[in-house]
Length: 315
View 1 (cartoon, rainbow, N blue to C red):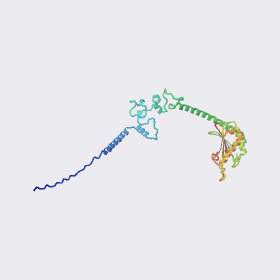
View 2: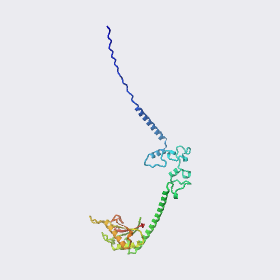
View 3: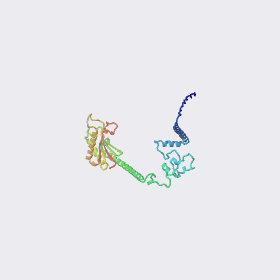
């Protein structure tokens, strides 16, 4: 009898090892090493750069500071200078030292001349029309010459107008001097920026209009007749301005100092026409109420006045 063979059971255990993890960590490590290299390179550059170069770089990245003729912080050709300038050639200056600016007589280049307008012109360089700057076109030079001529003419005209205004003021004062002493307070003659201003003002005991009305007193008619006679030979355009004090009308009234001053200016205009003044010479009639007082006290009698302005130009 054969012996039975034992049954053998083989138990196989499969051990699975970890798979491939990929190379993502290598990319991160490479980025880190690159960043560190860039950081140390930046530190080296900052240590090697001069203070002038650092200021130039800072100004370049500052939008509030206009760029100068040298836009960068470097020297030589990369700093905005002419590469053929003797100061930038090898061996002409010490390394790292910026060349001093030179005048035109020392052979500076055109770029340096344009960058330093205060330097004198170099021999042999001709300017534009009548010594105009080199950076102006012929049309701009012609316009500049025309503007200069117009300015000279305007100055001459202004001087002549001032002399004419002074002579007219003297003539008015002389004409009113014999009018029963009316120039003792009623007349104000002064020069303005755009002409001659003749003001006829109220006095406490001698008003030019009725109280609160635009009815002229005979005194105003006599004064205007003398003024018209004095300015009759002139051709200047005229404006008539009415002024009042600050005394208000009753509450709720539709008639105010604005209407009163305008009506008084129109009454004075009619008196000037009756005295012989040409209607075409009056170009403006205005009422200004108490907006432009003659005296600091807004209720002063002198603030009630008629102003006749002779403009400087006749156009």
